Length: 255
Ligand code: BTN
Image 1: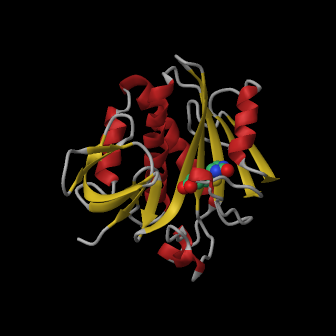
Image 2: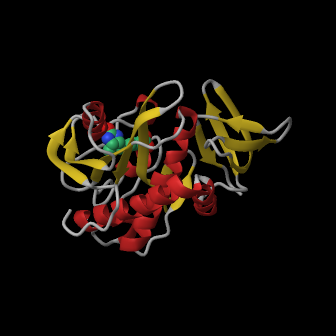
């Protein structure tokens, strides 16, 4: 972390060879009082956590698995806004170290060439009125070779190496990511989520596109109108009123 040009994020960085999940480690450290900006990075995870109880593939040496502890003075309902920060930070970091053009897919995927290269999982500890801490979990496929496997996954996946043909230096990428996250967090504390949400929307692969939404046991098709201040997706179905989708999966349909 020498020379990390940040104010808060990465003030303390803990690097582990192997752990169950960097999110779980960061969560426990935060419960024990870890300062805001504490970062946990692991070379490999034996039980990497994905969204919706899924497993996050975490082979050793090739990718980035990290978790950041933040203590924003906000209410629990506003905490989902932090997802805008980590998503935008990852997209900016990819642009800094590669020539790729990452796209954002709601709620928290980053795609390159239409395939997933990164995933985010936030976990929170809060009281009714205030957040104690949030753990931002960030997984980025840097140099993993997925080959055929990539297209058999539930969400077709790739890595920066596969997409660009160039290996990505893990330390350099991590530095770029933590610096971008720090800048965005600073801005969030001063100006709120609006400017970051605006960048999110600009970068999103789904604005104005037709999608299939799967939310719980419901499934419907519609056109994406945008995302609200709490990260909910606004979708206009073919018939009926505008839908506010709080959680679930969206699949792009053909134009
Ligand atoms: C997703 O399902 O898209 C979210 C994946 C989040 C993976 C990252 S890897 C670092 C951190 N630790 C975990 O156990 N999960 C997150």
